[in-house]
Length: 468
Image (cartoon, rainbow, N blue to C red; front, top):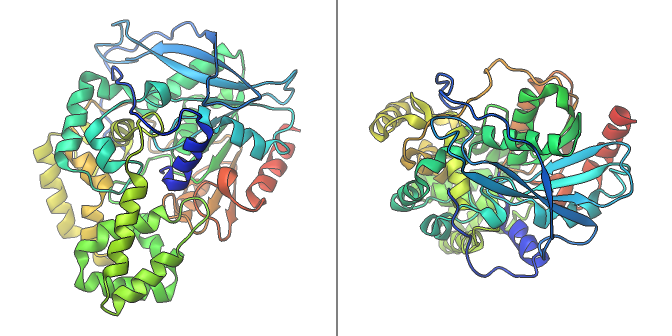
């Protein structure tokens, strides 16, 4: 679900201001709890013209949209607001309507990708207007948690110090409950109304697919079609990462998988770091050669290439300013929305979480995480972050039986471990009108990074069939 080193390099390249500095501070399947006590009334949706600045290339005009910080709960009427930045593709007309493209993370801004997406999709989305947005807590309004930013960076799986996680949650204070996917979905519908669109095409990459799915569930009549690239299932990413762990054998192949097993048999402590490194190298154009060579050496008793690989991965993921990828937003959103591994969801006390995880670990069979040891599932960073995240009120969520009936195109790379092909297959089966296109040899993020045109050709065909 993450950006990866290639994505960060792209952000730095397109942003004239460069990659120095930090993000500005911001007021800054879950448990199905009872409905919130207070729900904020929908604000008047209004776009205000704004300069695009150096983050957005030519061919766009920009605007801002003001939304409530707190949309539910006792603080819903406190008057605090957020300003979201929006980029709208220029053009005299767009007879096929608006196509909003949602970026991933969570934590990734949208505006720096506007020009690249427009260029990549120019021949595919003719007659449509591309719309991108910096989702709440990203971009110029990024949540800033310096210690977590330094140690976790852009990774889902890097293991941050517990103190950094706790400090971030405390820094955000009551606002940490205001950065869930449900809040972003409400922001998006405010944007749709501001654009005066009765309906629009909603697309997403990685975490953006989860936002798009949740939008379609909440606003089916306003969702003309869905484009899901590198798919996160609509129930969210499981904290134990069991599906991506098992998918490693398919992605690496038999020889490298056997080497991985031999390394981890003697050095299980290397599991979380290796899982992170291998996943990182499935982002964009997969580059797994260094992984297979390091595993081969490790299986023969030479761990130096593996340790070098782990150091390189940590260097690639860290040192990224919050405005390019917010680790604080990443933690706040995922820990609210992911299916909890303990009773009580994100509101559960830490002692409840630890007791439930201890009991769960005794029950998880080796086959559930193979070729990785079970210790990797319980040691990787996604679980480590959310088990330490301060108790937070659970957001509203759709029923587990909710079904998306909107026409949908799903794109998945068969080398992707961040959002593995198994997730896309399961999501397609759960939808009423879905077509899944598997891009062989591709990794994470098809429409923005696939070297070939399989994904874009599929999108062109889908739009022609659905929109005319």
